[in-house]
Image: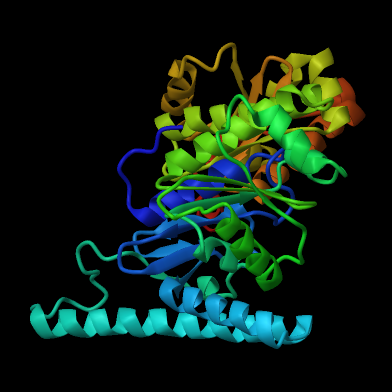
Length: 412
């Protein structure tokens, strides 16, 4: 994946959505991303936010991220490491100390930002109220003031961009008794160096074990890193979003090729290609695609592909699934996506490629909602048979321009 010259927060949005739409990398609310900026800030995914939900809501805010002072985090982890080597805290005490240190790092970052605003106010002409300063990063919305990911301590110690995932092909090996040997054997031809981290409870305890593993490997921030966490997952670290995605793709593709789960896992890679086509051509903001695995729905469409474009019987089918599905014969040609946009003035919500069905939305929750409405639509047709009466052309035209639906999409 090639990431054009974007602001750091936009790059982090792209990275988060790319990973968040891959079920073979991320399940539920797991995984996290981060980026460090030249002013000493660490932007990291907030706790309780799915990776696919991280995005710029408008020109002034980014949803699902927290910002902390990285120097403060590094000072705290070094202090806690020394404390644990001399007079170890109990696990609950260690976690409480780490949580307090996160609050301090967050407060110090806010103080630094306030100092910058004060300097700007003193040196620049006053700007109209609510007008942003040129070049300043978006401010954080109320939701983004939430607690940082418990894995923030891992990110603080690593390079400029960090991606932590739970790939199924990695976890399957990381849970084996001879896990290190198996990774070395299977990745010998594609990765120069692996850093292995023995299991520890996620959070500060794992971060302290990671610190020891990094020192043993004589790793420095300037170097890329591929880190395997026992019974847990994968971390890649590098100087850019493109670098960490390349590392993650390299590791997971190689392991998937050798996995007994290959036939099940390899279709998930298509989600990145599908959403990439839509993003490049028609989407106003980054979207994701989601591989549909509903057995009944897939069987129904395999038996009768034309059922994807049956006229809507109820409003939700039209407003959630769009006016029609888009069937792609190849992922190398984006002209069908552009033609869809020109015809319907929106991007496709349902896409079929070969035998696979995908839904497209802002995040995983939205994609699953589209899938559920599509299934309800087809079940209604099956139950009603030929007697089913679709919405009139006039009603469909009205719903397509419905202000209430535009509002729902913007705030979904």
